Image 1 (cartoon, rainbow, N blue to C red):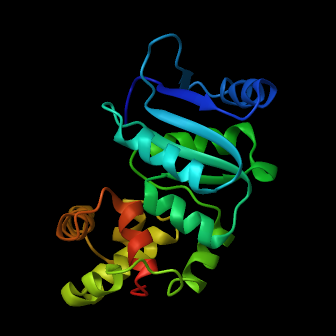
Image 2: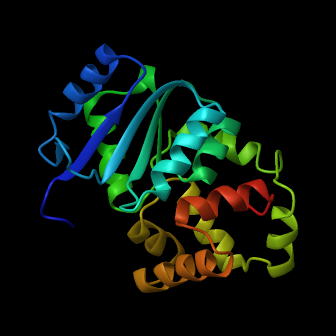
Length: 207
């Protein structure tokens, strides 16, 4: 666990919404708003819809030199939009109507810690739509290399929002084993992180 607060920046379509989002985060002692030229650990992006310009913004943010994590807060957010956002590199997804200060802070802290925060019902929708919208070549790549039953079991629990220690308890593995499984999958398929692995496994219909 990190001792210093997570530095956060906020991008929103209008100043009032941006100010409200910043105010909501100020209530968490574990979060500090980035000021001036400070580089954020996490970027909170508030949007109406997860359209192509938003996905491009996520890509650019994740490609920046200091590679901040991204938490998306959207007015409209369905399973397929969530799937594309995670595959693009977003670590956290929230609907605006459900976003309180504590919930937003939780998503920010999860993103900074390498985990992915997604509403439970949205994860259910992701699983239901897992075979839809597979990118060309993705299913073939996953299918050729394959996933072991252990790898699928771990990724299913990651997709359901479980922490590493919870996955270890559920599957009767050590935390080190779970970490190794996730590392192996991300390295084998040249993925960025566990959220990216889950997204592409879902898109390829392997979960």
